[in-house]
Image (tube, rainbow, N blue to C red; front, top):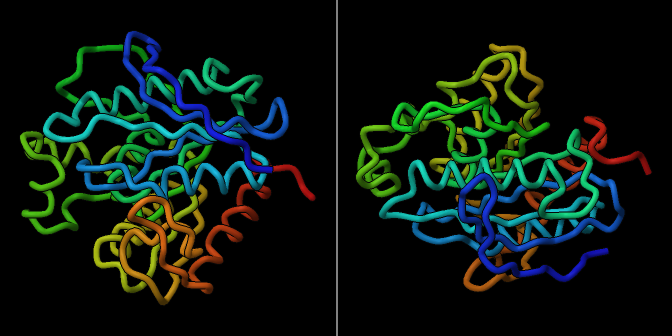
Length: 263
């Protein structure tokens, strides 16, 4: 069952302003996922925001879509917002009766960069010292960015703007260690930025013995979302049935990880 989202007024957690849509799970005590949509830090794409949240509801998980800060000043505020939202979700401050051991994150494209920084527990040199940041129990990398060094310099500049000097720090794979969250990775073979980043995620996670599952589908460019043909604003109208099977594979992975119950 998919519930209607609740658009919240701007709220605060740990002193950080949050702008979120809430999609409660169908069963109290279920797991939940922080959804970080793509959009190159210039927009929040609906098909891997609301689209993913509705899919997560349909498989039995709650979801929170964060509209993180965009350029010209995405860092460190965007990461701080993501951390605060994850912490609030783990403490059932956004959705009722969430099981904190089954709280994860899904990030797409630029949102995958934020998800990866959460999954690795990364902190930035420009941030004031603080305690250990919250980490998700799992992460889903949907054509998410792992290593900004794999992108052309112009693309990195377009993503980061004035924060371009932080490109190495903002590359999640530089922070991977054995405590990084178990990861599901997928991309398509026709996705210029997504495929090399998916392969980089898989290689580095495997080197650190982090559980990782990779799927590469033959058709579809960058940012295809669920590939189910359902439109969300200007995005998500592309239907690629074979590629759309990634969500079924991910559901099986979530069940195997104990995030979803069998059945």
